[in-house]
Length: 111
Figure 1 (cartoon, rainbow, N blue to C red):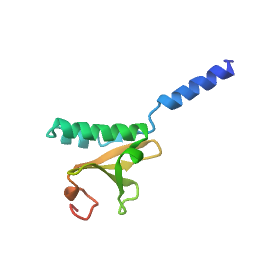
Figure 2: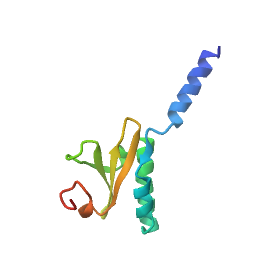
Figure 3: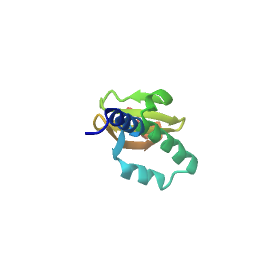
Figure 4: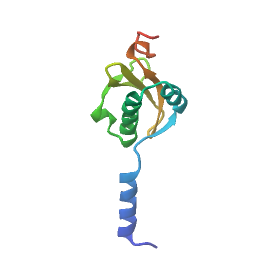
């Protein structure tokens, strides 16, 4: 049997370094969009995705609920760029859409 304090410290360290969420769907959407995106747009999207992974997205970005689909929401990344994400579970999410707001599914504009 291990030292109780060592076990506690190891569990605590794992909780601190473990991402809050993991991207498990939509990598194809991201890759297709990235093929034609400029580097500055890619950087903005990657920062948003990293924020989601670490659990700070809702504090650091403007987020708009999708009232049509409760587990989906929009992240306003730039004035002309939105990221639509879907919560797949308590610890996973997926990319649904990347592009202009007017073309985004579920906004009433691009539907």
